[in-house]
Image (cartoon, rainbow, N blue to C red; front, side, top):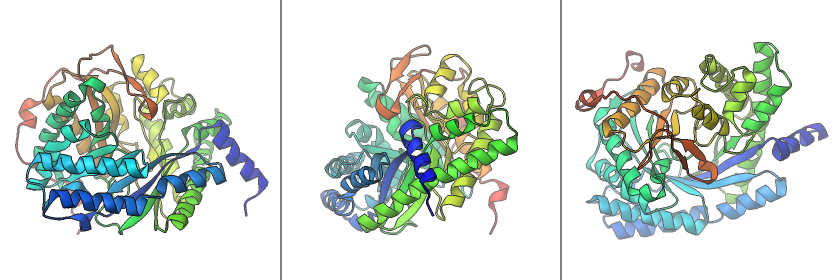
Length: 454
């Protein structure tokens, strides 16, 4: 039974502690939109997206109004387009036409972002995969809502280093293609290892081929709620600390469960998963770095940061699992630099470096996220950063990702403003020593020995 104290507590979380449902994401299977004609593929895609998700924005707005729960984003994830367009696309420009159609469909149904302009190339690349990847810079430059992801590795298959090398170049070309907007296209492009099929968060969301025709996945976020709860147990033991985080995560997840079930009922689409992720925003009081400070580190990046983040991530997952039978996606703590005011401050004062962030990705939910670097960073260095992060994911059997932004025309000491939820960031230095000889090798890094479990 829900009592009045729980209602009051939840209301305070929403009004004073930045609790929100970060996204309702409708996943849509587009495999039945395949055709020999690019024009027909585009037509089928637009028709299906509008038919399935046409009422998503309206429904989310109604739920938010009726329950008083902020629903920040409405999004769509689709089957990786390299699969859908394989029969029709003969050149990269064909995929760009599909990207435009996706953007038009997303605008028509009123969603913030659409994810799934993607390729899964963890073991090898088809000709279709290559064409889609080559089209990414132009596709992201000419669209507003389309997000792209490429999965280059997994624990079961190893790391496709040909794809890693290619993505270093593609990230740089995307930066150049959107240089008039501070290389914003790279904020819509992520390179993954062990990508999940049911992630509702952008830019890495896509509708996995193991999913049903349509699904509703909900992402909930509440860094401010966790920080507020921890303020009441300052100086307490680790046991009390952990119990407080778990109980708070449980309450946050229940809010997501309510919204997910209601959206599923109203839209007639099955409920998939709740992704409980402490995804920060640039707003004051909505920072994962502030939680780490409350746990006891002076600044994010100080000694003890990785241990504190590991504790936080684990307790968030434990609390979420108790609150919903279907917790999935990424779930845990995100550390995007530009989207977290505390992370921004830590980077500006020198407490936080890319190397420390890489160490933190061993225990957080995703990886190197929303990091601005000098625009003249070599392609091979970007590939090396991607390879390092993929190796962490492959060996540790977890999802890792790189969403890095080489801001053309800017260097260390400059800052860049992306706006909205994407925030702003200082341009961070990268290691000046190269890895060209390593990245230029062909083939793939084999899967680790512990992947052989059949």
